[in-house]
Image 1 (tube, rainbow, N blue to C red):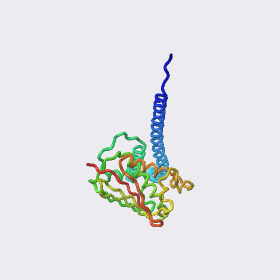
Image 2: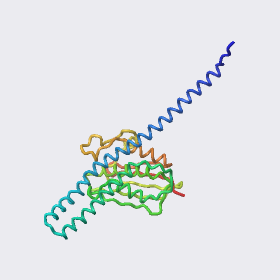
Image 3: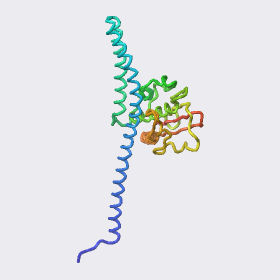
Image 4: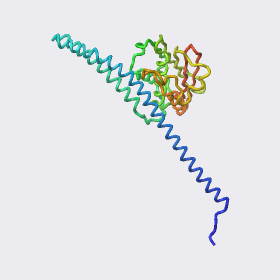
Length: 265
């Protein structure tokens, strides 16, 4: 007589199968989250490219005009001046390309003590555009000694997203972007990114971190559009680094995003 499994054994085997399926779904969900994070990074880079195309045109146009004039004049001193200008602009263009490539790379280094001021400065410069050209004043008040234990590349992505959002919010008005750091409680460093844009309405402030929530999807300029993933991914990345991302705003009076990060020991 062939022995049969008991009901208890069948239930146990079924439970194991269900658990394996749940584990597989969890791994798949984590993989999808990582893919979405990468897609959002490339979407941000697409916006950056729209800005970059304008900046490259501003760099190349005077180089061409100055060089053509110097060649026609056949003046050695003028040619030297044109060469100096060409070198200056070429270095600026190379620096912009380096920053874009840095944003595109996936740095696999884990959480390490990282000085925050260079990270903030680099995130601002990743815009590839002097914000003064958009009538936006920038103030960075981050002590050189302040460090957090973070995955630097992912936090730079968060900072870039927040700075890009602030720029988009202030376009068309005299703007002010203030990035300030202070020591918080529970061994946290608080990074405040504040703008004087239109702010966020009270009835939607809890929705802005939801996937695909955006007020910029229909804008006719590519550097002012949004997919509605930037803040969602930014909050996820902050949490993956042991931190939080919150916002305070009074409609008509700007918004302040606060990134709380674990201080380096």
